[in-house]
Each structure stands twice: as C-alpha cells, then as structure tokens.
Image (cartoon, rainbow, N blue to C red; front, side, top):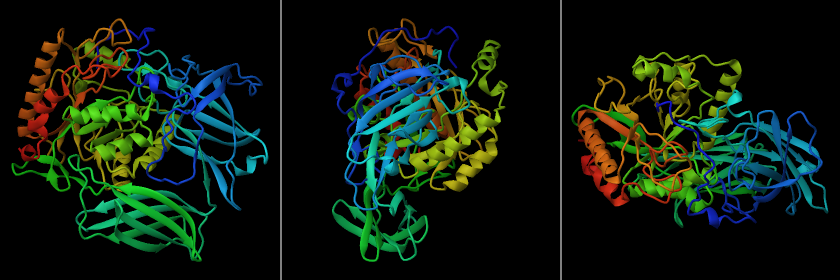
Length: 601
C-alpha cells in the first residue's frame, strides 16, 4: 500500500513513441482474434460520430462530436478525452457497406471489448445487449441488414465505473494512489465476419507431454447428425498429425497422437498451427486456423526438497513484472500493435520470464504476442470497486497486511457480475499457452466465497495452477502461497507444507524521470533520488531474492513494468521512452535466477 499523500494526475499529456503512428482511417488494423482466424473479415475501426446524453434520455438525433474507435472515451487518442459520468450514456454511430453474403450465410458483428453495458442497433433494429468490460462478444446482425444501401450502426454504452457492481480493476472516477483514470466505451477492435450457419465457434488445443497427445476442444454451432470435423496439426507447412471426429453436438473433442511433441517454453516458444474444418456430406462448411503450445505447468519438489513451480516437469523460478497495461495516450488501449507487443519485448529484454497481468484483461493479440515471444503469464481477474480507507487506517496503526482485518462482504449484484465475467475471462483466454496461472483475488479486493471459487477454477482448468489469494486473506486453498512484501522482503515466511511460496508483489522502488510523468507529484513504496541509487537498491533486492530462492522462494513479481500516472515505481517511464536501468544490465542481474542451470538451486 502507498502512503496517503499521493496526488491525482494533472493535465500533463504524455505521448508514446507510437502516438503519431496511429492511422485515423483504421487504427489497429490487424486481425483481432489469433486463435480463431477466418479469411473473410472487415475492420470497423476509425472515425465514428459520437454524443453523450443522459442515461434516461432517448437515443440522440444528432451526434455533434467524433471519436476515434477503438480508443476509450477518456483517452487522448479518442479525440474526446472527457469523462463519462455514471448518470450519462455514450452513443456511437457510423455506416458501413455490408459484404456480399452467399445463400444462408450470416453476418456477425464483433466487439473485442466495451466497458461496460453495450446495446447495439443496426438500421434502427435492436440486435442485442451485453454486460462486461473485458470479454469479447458478438451479435448476429443478418436480419437487420437492408439490401442495396449503407447500413447504419449505433452503439449505446453505459458505464458506472466504481459506482457500479461490476469488475473494474484499477479504474476510478477520482484517480490517485494505486487507482487510475476511468475507462469507458469501446476500447478494442470492432469488426464484421461473414460465417456459415453451421460453423466452428471455438478452438481450444491442449497438449499432454506425458501422454504425447494433443486434445482439441471444439465449440460448434448449427451442426447435425452426420457432420464431422477434421483437425490437422502442423509445424509450419509440415503436417504432424490429423484426425476426424463426429460433430453432431455443440461440443466435440478430437485427440491426436503425437509421439514427438516439441515443448513450448520461454527459451523456445514453439507454436503448432491448427487447421480445423467442419464437413457435411462431402462439403466443407467452415474452416478456421488456430494454434497451440505444448507445455505443462505443475508443482513439485526440487533436489533440495523445496516446493517449486514446474514447467514441462522441470523446476522453474518465475521472475516477473507486475504489468498494469495502462497507456498515457490510449489508457486501456495501446496505440498500435507494435506498442502492444513492446511491453512484453521489453520484459524479455530485461531478463524477466514472467508477467503478472494485474487486474486487467488484454486484447487477444496481447496473449498471442506473449505466446510467440515466450513469457509466462499470471492472469488476474479484474476486481470490483474497493475501499482503501480501512487499509490506510490500519497501516497508520503500524499493522502489517497479514495482521489487518478486511471487510470481505460483497453484494449479490457484485457477486453475480464477478462470476459472470470470471467465466467469460476463462473461456476467452483458455486457448493461450502463455497463461499458466489464474489469480482470482488480489489483496482482499471484493473477495468472497474463496475456497469454492478457487476449487471450482482448479476443477474447470487442470492445465493451469490456481493462485491462492494474492497478497493476504489466504484460506489455505489454491496451489500457491502468495505474499506481498513491500519493504519486508527479507522477512521470509515459514514454508507451506503443500504449496510453493511466491512473492506476488515486491519492490516498488520510485525514481522520478523528469519530463516523462503525467503529474507534478508521484509516489513509490521506497524512493531513490538518483539513477545510481535506484540501480544499487534494485541490485540489493535481486541479490536478496536470489538468497531467498535458495531457501525455497519459488517466484517473485517486481512492481512494476512502467510508471502509471502518479505511481512512479516502474522500470520504464510511463511513456515507454526511458529505461530506468539499462535492459542488458538488468538481464545480467537476473541471469542467476533465470538460467536453466540455476533453476533447481
């Protein structure tokens, strides 16, 4: 927890190296869904008409403003850069040319992410409503199309932010301390996709190195008796294995035998391609491309008897960064795909092999970059709004987090929204091999029904580890014992007899980088006045982590990747222009923790 004297960000606008690369005609033009690709699609990003009205008002007749989709309303890149109040509603409008559809084809309208309640109209027809700030969704808009004319698309969005019951992560209407500028509206790519009425809706490939198999779970739509799927596993252009399976219901499973699987790891992030086809009476109804990485994550003991995190059967120390995923120009949305990949590339350059994605879910392409670049991802579930006051008061009394009492009560509405969006997150991110750990709760923020939720996650997804509550309010459930230890790193806790011990957060050293902050005043858990002092103190922490590793510490997540608004404890400046310590110097410091030869020591 930070001190209570931090101030909210002021109006200083930072630009990133990619701000000027944003194409207004079609920002973020890349295919948005790497795990389920079809050849035909149409990107709808770009300039839309825009208006803000009272939530209870009828749809606006005029749209006096423009907004650049898919950047959040509050962001600089949107062109609006204004807050959306909980009592207001945002309205978007644009026209598009519908693609030519073959007989019986359907047209799906996709949204990668919209915060939070979205209602969509096509040519005045209400085609659906969705609640959720982080999950992709779509509507079938075929029946609302009008032949021979441009189609009108209107989107209305309501977002109560921290006045509502829904998961929000670090957003706040009045940001400061560890909470940041609110994000509302469309913040991921909007796109069209012509599809067959009988089609493949989801592909989730998992490998078993022990059984030497690849199992592909397929979610299907509109299938009937006699249909079948064909799954082909490829390494580049080389066919490795293929198999057919019946496809008479909405769920089909196809298991392929692969005697010589190529394991995925950060050092060798090898990815297999998947080609999946749906057939009926000799006709191909649908064809998609996907991919998978062959990796196994588990817990076991090393030669010294310490419980470790195992990757592909071998002990591996997870050395990572707490990654908030915030941008000074786009807030939730990176300005370009190159920018989206940069934080992962920088993490690897600095010698880390792990990212804890902190109470935010990224666009699908972020996880594809993590898969191909080779990084282990601890994925947090975004939390609902949380009250910092009890924590600050107890810190003022000199209590450590483990000694504090936290109100864990949530309303039925908060609980329902959490469960719904947790399910959506697991479904959306399950196919990505880089995601190796689910983090359901962080520091008691909105925590409830802990044992049942963690046990349910473990049962649902045995291919990943479930972190016990990250930070405190641990109940003994989950596969990992996770501590947050700012300025207490040396107070190594007793070993848990069943679970490896990790530092889910540590460090948080502050170093101001003049002319690269958004505010006049920032904070950190510990302050360094000079770059040299910052580097020496960081080196001391890494040496301490190395000593604790020898005593049984299984992983450590440093806070954090970049500065964010008034939180100045990143290894990079908020605008990504400055590394506070040279990446090659950091990589050298980290080598004793991450080299394969050192992993079991």
